Length: 62
Image (cartoon, rainbow, N blue to C red; front, top):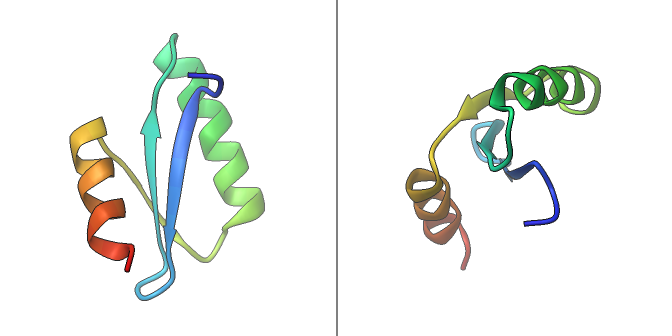
């Protein structure tokens, strides 16, 4: 995977779902937190595993 995380923005309830893909996860989590506060400050962020992330995306795509 070329990025360290993937995200999905759900407009209906303003939730930002994030799956951290790379290592070290703690360093990536700090970067994601800064990115989230800058880019999507009104959204709730949820860190999730790959299965949950794929399930959320699949449920919300038409």
